[in-house]
Image (cartoon, rainbow, N blue to C red; front, side, top):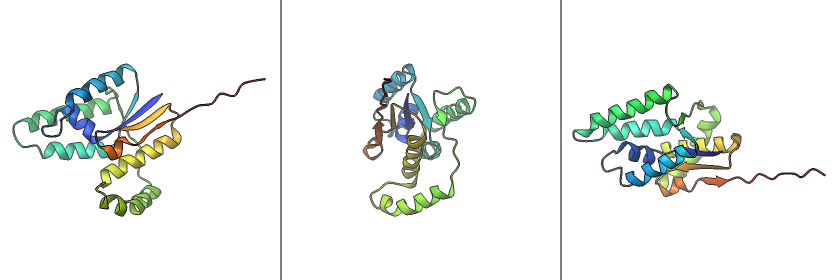
Length: 158
């Protein structure tokens, strides 16, 4: 099984958000390939919030059209009709401690709380979900570097 956590940069390209969709064609092609190969897609809460914020900042006539499309994505997600599943874990006290411990150094290098939250979700999924590959699917280099191939060893019976 292969698992991808969807970053905001991917969602913005899928939605065609102006000035945030420079890789729209490539992302859409990859998205279709990912669906065909039945990879598991996870939509982190941070991606939902950040995408909504970016849509709200759109100027011009496309804002409503894109907002309606995103609302449809969310409805389909809630109804189990989307090609991804939402992240349904609650924030726990140890998560808040992680954010407190990591945020200052992350912020100083330009990694915000949303990205830090996606990284935390990646680490938690990596620890509990069996996968051949797990990754953060992002156009941002600092997030796309989170990728791990797992090797499963088989013990031979004598």
